[in-house]
Length: 331
Image (cartoon, rainbow, N blue to C red; front, side, top):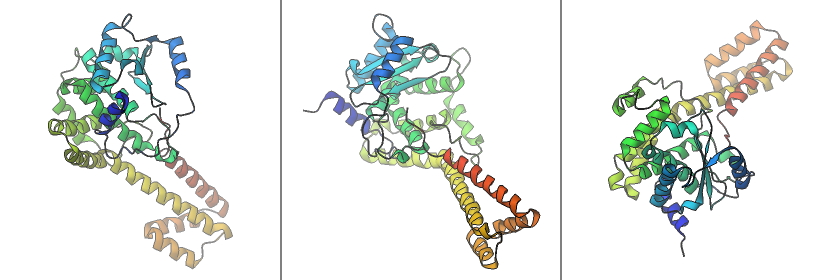
């Protein structure tokens, strides 16, 4: 017999963004949920009907909408000036959500349904589970996970205006007293983005501006959502992300890889303290005339020791930046 939780997972799976890979989910991460829960019990206040009746009702309604039992989700509020909510879902049967006090103060209960749905979405989609190959959990997949979780949040929120208001509040830290919520005006900021710079590779979430546009593309087709329609939506979202998120990052990664190859190649060639004619031809053919001229200028202007130090420094700097695009622990 299929359990309610399995049905909910299947339901959430139908909304998963196609670039959010379900690859080799395995055993829970090293820390245990009981350790996390114990720390929250010590330092936070658990959400229940007696102390947080309205917030508890929000949680109950979202759980009901997703078809899961309320007791699967243990939730807390912690004192924090950050506007945050975290889901700890390192086993397949339960999860813990921790809300900062600031996010509770900022959002209405209707807006919080989007946040709750988003966090439970991470749980249902297995985002908190460990992958057998850690290299699969890179900065891209973390960002794609947020696109998937946002869709679950949209379904739970009901009113798309609550979703847009929530995200603009999260972007600014300001409420209704300060903002006129004009989503078209906010999205127009996309036109001012310098695409050549890309997003900070350390960010595990896409920018809120990018998330809202991805949600907008999804929501337009939600009323007629089906498997074929989902593929079309995912293609549109993928195309958008490639322009505003993935494209610039991929371009920078490729440049870094080429730089690393250039300097490691030259370092290897200079082991004998010289760059012979054949090696010069290889550099020119493989990396182009501009790189070739720069290498010759470097060898002309500096002595062997200085060149070796310069190349080693370039290799270290490039390697360090490459690492910022790699593994980011799931949390």
